Length: 156
Image 1 (tube, rainbow, N blue to C red):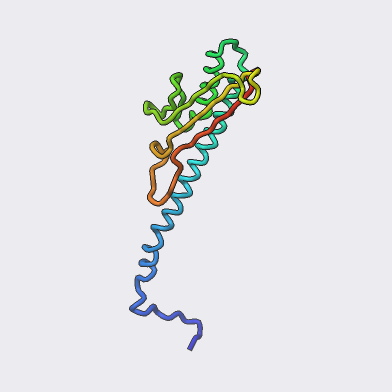
Image 2: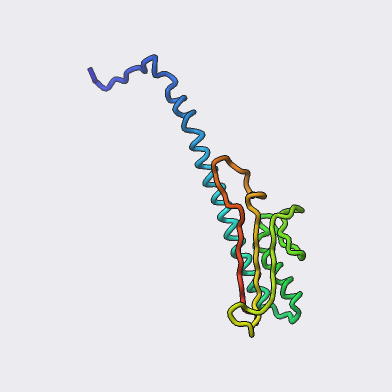
C-alpha cells in the first residue's frame, strides 16, 4: 500500500549516507583546492605578464637619458605589478619573495632583434613556481615548474 506514508529505513541502510559522503569528500576537496590553486596561479601569471609588459614600456618611455635610469624605471614598474604577491625584483636581477630568491628578472636595453639600428628594452621574468608555490601544494594537482614571460618595447 503506497498511500504517501514514508517507510522507515531498513536496518541495513542506516549510515549509508555517511559512508557515501566519506567516500566523495576527498574528491570534492581535491577539486575545490585544485580550482583555488589554479586560480591563484593564473592570477599570478597574469601579474607577471602584465608586470613584464609594463616594465618594458616604462624603460622605453622613460625620459631619462642614462640606461641605468631606464633600467631602474623598468624594475619599479615590475615591482608595482608584483607587490600584491609579495614578490619583487632587485637590482642584481634576482626575483625575491621576502629574502628568498625565487627566480630571475632581467631587463636589458640593446639593439632590436628585427631592426639593429633601433634600441629595444627587454624584460624577462622567470618565477620558479614548482620550488616556491604561492599556495600550498596539494597532491594530484599539477602546477607548472616555471612562470616566465618576456616583453619587448622599442626605446624612444
